[in-house]
Image 1 (spheres, rainbow, N blue to C red):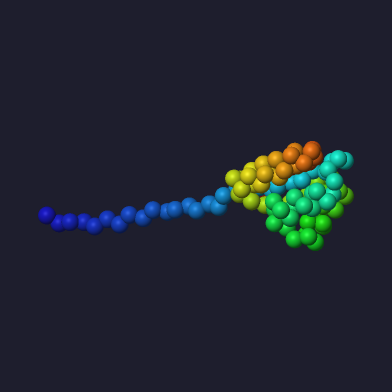
Image 2 (image 1 turned 180 degrees about the vertical axis):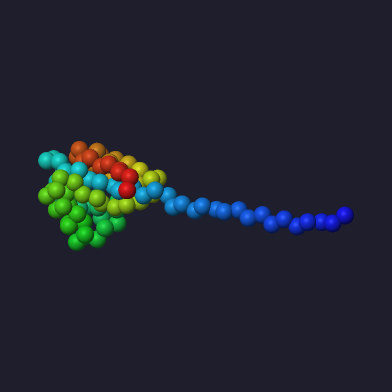
Length: 98
């Protein structure tokens, strides 16, 4: 009996995870030095970048702070919100799909 060889190929479609922007919204109650502090401590920004982002939040009403995968973005938002509330500030932070 003759044997036949069959070759099987599978195609793998690799997709990268979706990315999400973390956005700070401006308010009239959260002090700018506190926002700068959050950007440095939670989002690992240097002082100059933190000051520039804070001014953009103040001038434009909101600013993209960082871009992460969903899980990391949610964790950063949660961490920054907890620190804000613990300090008595109503800072609003949201995520938005890229």
